[in-house]
Image 1 (cartoon, helix red, strand yellow):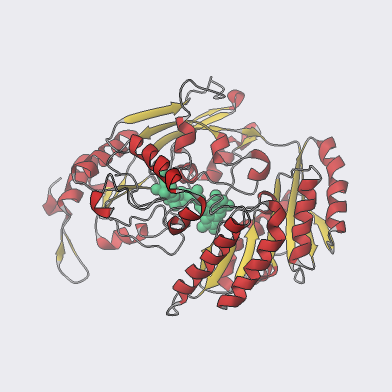
Image 2: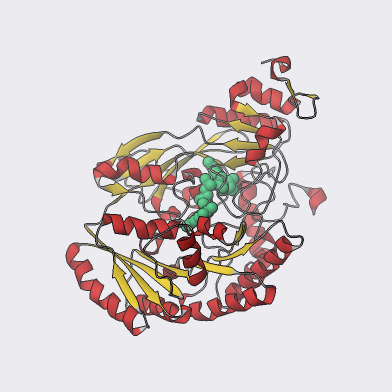
Length: 487
Ligand SMILES: Cc1cc2nc3c(=O)[nH]c(=O)nc-3n(C[C@H](O)[C@H](O)[C@H](O)COP(=O)(O)OP(=O)(O)OC[C@H]3O[C@@H](n4cnc5c(N)ncnc54)[C@H](O)[C@@H]3O)c2cc1C
């Protein structure tokens, strides 16, 4: 492909031409698979949060071979590679802070295999999370990890972040549902981990658990080009309840009470008054206008078991102070409740144009104390903070809503976020439950990791990617061995 064919007029009227790097990508992948014009790159500059980075080029790869070629071209030009799914990551993971190549998987959306008897599907990384469950629904199966962003986020992104979701309380997060991967390493060679074939149960494979190492590695070890996913049978019976509480403390007590009673609901989610009011303003129906907090509790399993659990859970909710408990009477009412929960972050736009979502984890027993601290932080900075989160597994999502157009606001928001995370760590929790460290939580890593811990993690990264080409500068500050000048 010749450079002359790819010239275009920029907005200033100058002829914009692709860089030698972009030209080599075009040579390798074809013109339609490469974006290099500034206005086209803009869509790849963000994930869902506040960080921004400018890739030098985007490769829209369609096959494993394309991904390997693009990575080789980047390596030849000394350019870093940032894999990109749907860009909903919220921690800056997919942001190209050092320029280089954004490797987009939006054209790799094939479901290669559905194998109901072995409860497996093999998919490409760009497949949207919800599309997996949709594709296997006629077999009475589904893919359990269900981030609230599941209508938009990709399986590749879920794997890189070890994503969680409302139903991960009972069934575990993404790592528990991935049995094998096909990957491309930084030198363009391929790596297979676990088992991608359907016949094997995936329970164990010889050697190290590299699948486990790559899940949650935020695109810093390898680029995933195929994944074998564990499917689960849809439960025989489901009961979804919405309990309203006059105070957040009561809802917190109910959460601890349910778990302490030995009941693990499929989902146990909390939303506070600010979130409820935003949802109502956004047109969601069936929510209690006067509640300080609601718990969305879902029980599922065999019909008899669910029938037995419901009165127990209702009693715990009532004892904790629930003023009202509604049970969804049919699939439509259940969908309505989940639509509200999964639409909660989007609805916060009704209050302020921007949000900054935290992802701290705490011991469930400290819920009450930490939520009180969140209110104190909100008052300290004069910033509204909505709470909408996976209460059952202690994964908090205090969501600071703000107007990024106001000077100094972003800095204030970041400080407020840091105060909340500090509290989570102080009560024995940690920095991220599901969104990853990315860029955003990097400064706080020493709160939860010693220098020796960080050194060990870096050694693992070096084993996969000795020159630090894949998503450099994410999770940890620059590697002093791969980048001596950065030390
Ligand atoms: C409204 C909203 C609600 C959310 N709710 C949840 C939730 O309930 N639970 C949860 O866990 N998260 C949630 N998230 C965060 C986010 O959706 C998840 O982290 C999701 O897994 C990111 O997927 P993505 O395709 O958007 O990845 P991206 O943002 O594109 O990338 C995320 C990371 O994955 C890497 N990556 C992407 N594809 C690959 C690949 N093929 N190989 C290697 N690395 C790759 C990127 O380099 C980056 O580091 C939410 C986000 C939003 C905006």
